[in-house]
Length: 241
Image 1 (tube, rainbow, N blue to C red):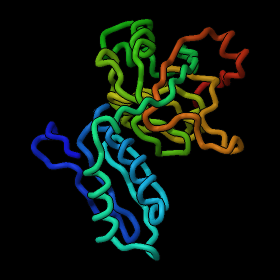
Image 2 (cartoon, helix red, strand yellow):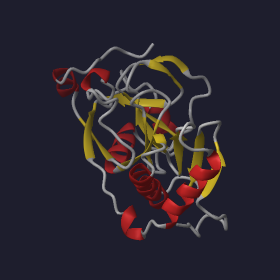
Image 3 (cartoon, one colour):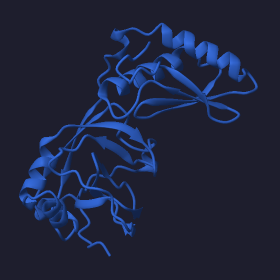
């Protein structure tokens, strides 16, 4: 399984990641096709190496493989990984994730960076909202905090760098943009992304038995709702400090 579009670099590429892990790189940058390869690899490794693999963490273009050092060692896990990956076909990559629609209340009271994003990109606030809701985003990775999904890619019309000085507290449910990515803060935390609105959808509920309803490979669509709808659905209108 190789990707000839990655600047002549041969993939997959296996790199040590400590005493009990190997990272499998399948490409570079943000790419749907590479991310599909990552998911196909994760499925195959889970099925064929279940006797020695403890955990798998898929990301944009890589797969972290944690293995049981009491049952295997790095040379053996590398050999088995290469064999598993070489057996993958293009058909294995055709995996469709779930589609999620997330309501967002776009307003400066809960999206303090809306006006600045509009000014930075020479457009109106309505243009920012329109551009953000027109895209269908792919979940490329999970991380930073439990339930935090990195979604891409944002329209070039509204791409905006991270804040120079991160905020000390971002309210749970805040919808944000940073460069070519967008995300929802699943719980209150510090953060340096540009906040454009807030959702009432809960994306981190450990009591439910799953960390998040979102998984790598899923699709996310945002749609605008009124303040009344947002409040009716349990949304928090507290302004960011």
